[in-house]
Image 1: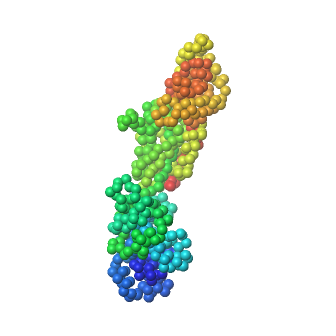
Image 2: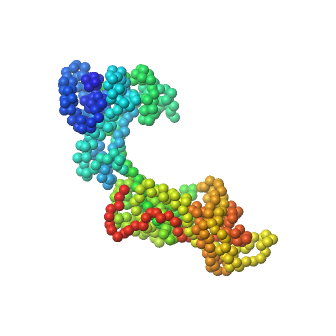
Image 3: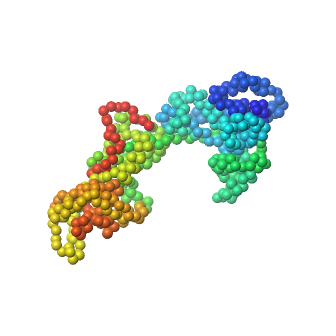
Length: 511
């Protein structure tokens, strides 16, 4: 097998992997280990066809030079230089290699060659159906990652589970030419394009679609359109670019909103900003600067209207920081970021308990948004009663409160999607529960209403009825009084997350 692979144009490293060698250590010194395996004569052979095909310096037919001197060293050097330019603080990294589609065609062609000439060997080595088990990507990592980590100026450790992924994209000059065979052998799979001019272009083929096609294509059809073994390339596969991306980190906390003129999220209508800032922007701006992330995505356990304050312990929130460069912080740094948010909030917004949390914890935030209870304090105005025959008698605010405080709870109400949110929420009737309710007098026509409700209850609509879309409304419960709401505060969101922060020491906080 070794001699045959060498003869058709494979490099020594690819000969080893096609032989089924699975020991990563073997690939660190290919020539010596081949000698140890008894292939010294094959390596030094003077076979004329071998000299013509391989010794003139063509890239390997299996790896297009990626595992072969001198092409491999040049690629590794470029990758190292690129990685050194990155400013991520992650002590580990993972590498993902992205190959041109022609590498899949060449791998399949080599598999068919071995299957045809050495079926017993293939049955032993290639236990996966219709594929060569030892891939070029695996061998490249085995050969070069240990060398790379020793050359880093700032030490980094390779970890396949690292949150920092370095993607190395490769390209091949003959890609279009080789991939055109796919269009000929599988016209039904690769004939539909948005632009007819692009038929036969590499852009037509995705790696996934090619992988799927090669699993089912008839061997004879493949061989009739693509050479087996693949032809010796005149140029190697070369480095195109290196892209780094760090998995998102999530920072959570609780916020208080003290202003009645501040939206939770940017208020932009028809491209025009209606208010100069928002809770989201006040919180995320310092966190973007702290983490050097590309983007921030804000979420919270529910939301309040522009004119509603959030008091008490505050509302739980989280911020997803996408592709952050900095992910390791001391507690002092987190407290400083907290302080920066509060300064930017300018007495309109303050936050507390700022901390990094795992992605799995965000389910608690969603659960709190849908399942927990919330406490409210509403300032209500008692208006005239309706004009029905039975409602001619005038009640004082004391009479109304006496009746209100006798209403049995829990009380289930039906709320049709409020008119004011129909533009962003589907029309539906939602049942919500008022767990507790009581009122106290403020003046002759005003009273404070204290409520504990199921999350997602529309409090304003419960008070004024929303033109009959909430039943029963507070007015109905008070025998037909018209009640309006003057001010509303969220007193508590009953979600004990994230946990309170102990600021007594300065230990590191990291992902």
